[in-house]
Length: 399
Image (cartoon, helix red, strand yellow):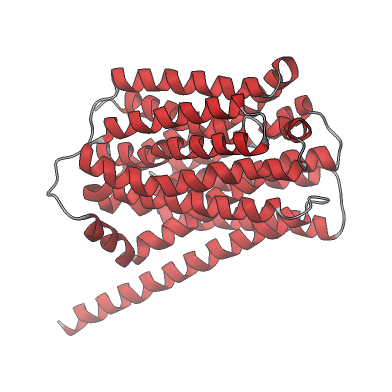
């Protein structure tokens, strides 16, 4: 299987969904004015996208294990394109929101396949490397989306951003149909209930899945909050916001690159622990500066850059740890991972949208809570492994 072909096809599939989540961020205030709602309500578009994005994956994963990857990808992209058209033509908040929901439902297929296709084709160190390359490639979607959205909003209005998503989705659909091979492995048929029971009983999988949920939620809360903070506190326009929005994203690229290099030399759990600490410390800086009412762009952007580095490194590493042992049910495992991540992100961004964004303090609270949860889970996992190894050693001594 051609590594770079699979990575390219997976990247454009997932990128279409990622762009839908961030392309309108620079235009949030303008959309709110046009639709006659408060700017914080536009954050609801992100939650409306993420929640069905997560829920739909619980369908796409098992369905792809049953019917194959290609037909499920086709279905998801058709739904995605219909959602983009709905948002582009909507004249009310509810209509545009409904379009975002459809986009989330359709884009959920990419959330499953970015893990499933990789595991179908690779395992072990090669899976870690391919996940790192994929994560680096996917950084360009949220990097470009706000920039494209800001420019199109200034020159053609905010609806043009959703029309761009329709054209993008249609193009990806055509490319996937022509070039993507069917990668579903031949495995003995098992019931859906049995597949999910295997995952629920696997405590290691569940811990890595929750860590990934916190990582993804941290990035989602940043994406949902950053534009509002820059607009409300510093009174910046969509052009400047779109430029500042992309500043932290290359650090995620650097984190993924570093994870790919270190994955060949050190334990994956060492990489996970180090980057959890980076994310937690960065979040604490935002929290403390917000408590002290230190309001400037640098005290927000610099810690976010470090946080994005940690997230970029954690995402491929924790994904590899979670899914590598589960090749026979990769679709279902990918569905659970993606569903948990996006449901968690939807919940956290919904909560964030209810809090007035007058300082970075609310952002700091949420990010620090997520970092603390990750650290606690990782320490729990480490203690379990120590106990397991001790019992194993005791049994050998008795023998």
